[in-house]
Image (cartoon, rainbow over all chains, first blue to last red; front, side, top):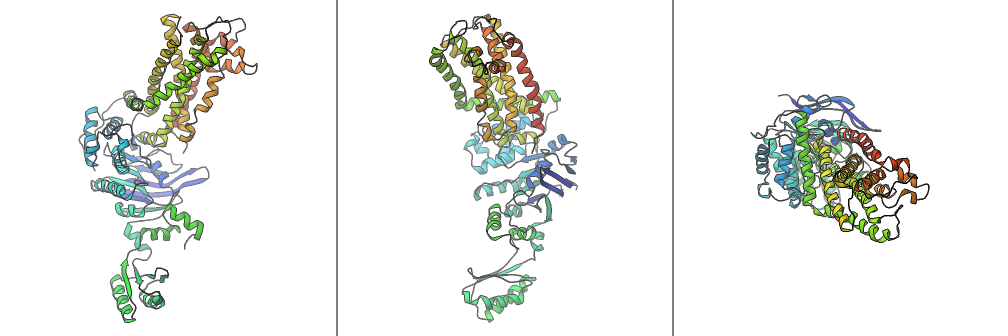
Length: 328
Length: 275
């Protein structure tokens, strides 16, 4: 199978800001790539270049086998785009929205109506089809927006921050709809600031920072890059912290982190099962009472911090940089 | 991949799709007016208020050079003012589409590239015909009449719509350039544009430095020409400026010049935004 999306040395500058700085991406047909990064990392610029909305000023990009700069019309026939803003027309009903987009994709009237029915069914909007979109919930609007992009069943579907601003329940609804799409084999390129979103939906994740790719891999590859598994220990008594840290240090493959106020210890380990059994036995032997203990993989937040030196979430990023400096 | 037997686009020439796609966009824009009547009411209430204010309040103290009824003099000015002010609605609608990402979605689709702007202009022309019908009705109510015959009246309506058409392209261009917040202020520059003209008083009655500005205002050419065509004009005196004497020519030329400048700017801006 070929690559549905391929970029080489892609560059785009706005004034003095280098939004994309030599971006290389390859997205195999039928896979889902998550573009992950903080605000200003170049995610949206990358999507805008790949969907022919912006011309790159360096490098090249192919989507569905067509060059975005030389043959934008062919690219537009091969893609669907759901941008950051919901383009749903509130004045129209859900069905009218979809029929309108169908007509603009040049479907004959009857085919546009049938296709609208199919999409309403696929995205669970049949019951609300003839209500004006302004009565829809955030999740329904987003699903209608996604459906509008899929009228032509595009080969490559671009999603720019699909669930930004949605509450958890609505996010879940949108994820479920996207999972169905992915299972159908559509190639998807999505940007997100939410690590759990990338973790849930993407086959591979490319981490962007300042217009460049700083890491790429499957979610579990990225997690293992920062040292694999960790053992977390929660103690009953804070006085036991130094003794427990000694025990943990003997099993650990790296430094032990101590969070005194929370009575919590954490350390990286190599062989998860052997290390866990060893630590449990040693803690018991030393007479230390443990409230909770477990082995876990690092979260993508930790991966992101490790790769870029800054946390992923924009709010966390601000407070981290303003108040306590960039964590090591 | 999602398969559907219905997701097969029809074929056709570039011209066919420009017409078809523009109509889909225009239809959507018109549905917004039909289903959101508050916008229509607002766009009619404003000129209605002006007709009443100037026709009966200020008008009582205004004299028309060469004599004649002030409300007869006023109505052609009101028609043209409404045509120019309509640009504010165009700016607002275009800026709203841009802010909601609708413009980007259009641009990422294999639809006819000119359709979103052409569709918008068609919808706004239809919409300005409605504005004009309401204003003419209002004029008849306050005692205005067309004395120039059917051909003259049709020519006057044609000139008014030509001015509106030109202002639509100014509106589309500005809507693509400015932010949605700034678009809400589009009336601010239009207000003096429609007042520093011969809309309410004859330029010879303005201070010496302001008169020529009003004389050369593109709006004034349309107003003078429409007054002549509707038979609402006083006699053109010997002291009339060149612009006034050639109002008919300028009423055609000004809008064409504006279209020649702003139509290409708007289309180019739509296809290649700055950022």
